[in-house]
Length: 312
Image 1 (tube, helix red, strand yellow):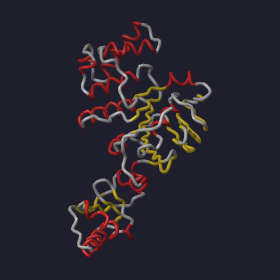
Image 2 (cartoon, helix red, strand yellow; image 1 turned 90 degrees about the vertical axis):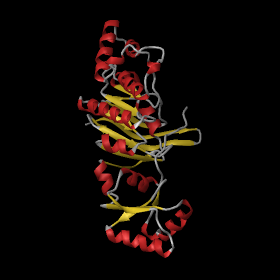
Image 3 (cartoon, one colour; image 1 turned 60 degrees about the vertical axis):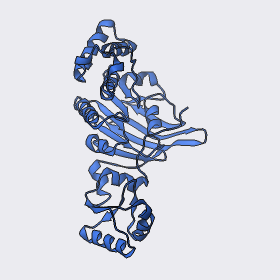
Image 4 (cartoon, helix red, strand yellow; image 1 turned 135 degrees about the horizontal axis):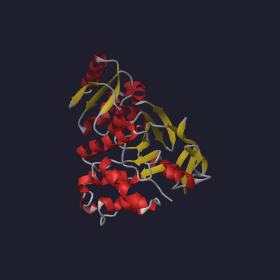
């Protein structure tokens, strides 16, 4: 049975309609990756699911509890790591976790014990008594994630948790997320990094203009593109001409390259002939297996970007 269920969610901020009948579910113990272009409604959806915002319409249940009717009963069941670390830079890592423990109404001894557990679990024990303001970005995000686990939540909501991290720190955080899933925690993950969704998500939901437009496993979504993708790059001054020359092949224009469905080498040869007829020489061209980037571009017609949404 799903541990998170949302049906027909709508939400508007003035004239801006952020959600338009959004429906999705998350099975217990899975990582659901939620993708969408800038302004698609990802953060609004998280805010509703975590009791921070009330929708204009629709229903939400977490672990069988009606989020709208009894938000106080839902909060002990969930954890949330937002886009920005919610830490006090003047406190040590240990003091931050103890503070969160006390806010969760743990006693002094219980909060201190839980802090030690989490510092060990998130590889922060050696930095336990360092002031958080001296931490690297990756360490801060791990500590913020640890703080969201103070109450042993059944569902953890991660809103673009690795934004701004270097590749090494991002990989370390991925390992932490996998370990949490392996302990039975259900994870709702929004991300602007398609590789991150490919690496972590058991299932992916793509939303655009406040509604779900596709869902499935990463492999199922890639199968929608086909067995291969032809990609090419041209000088910016030639891009419009190249797209026009390939118009009958349904090209998709990304930030750095043009992609189109492929049947294999015959497609590659046909593309080269079409470009040659227009006197266009590509700077790069080839075939590859489809990626989530290809899926995303084909579904939404745009690349992912950090989400900035209207808030109440």
